[in-house]
Image (cartoon, rainbow, N blue to C red; front, top):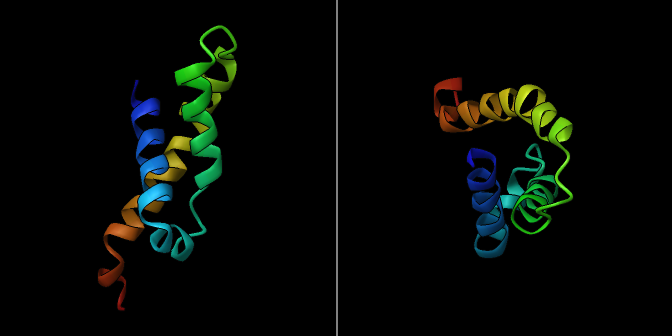
Length: 77
């Protein structure tokens, strides 16, 4: 459910804040949108291994990027 929520946030940012999305290409916007569509609409096509891989490998990187974005002024800018 957390992956679905995070993916929905990405979809809303893509839809409503294209300028923000364009300014932050370090985030995998389209992959997050794809994950949302797969989870929300591909009920029987969900690959548990892909979901696990995303949670285990991709989410920590995403959290690091979000942390850096949140604290960008602390980096001397």
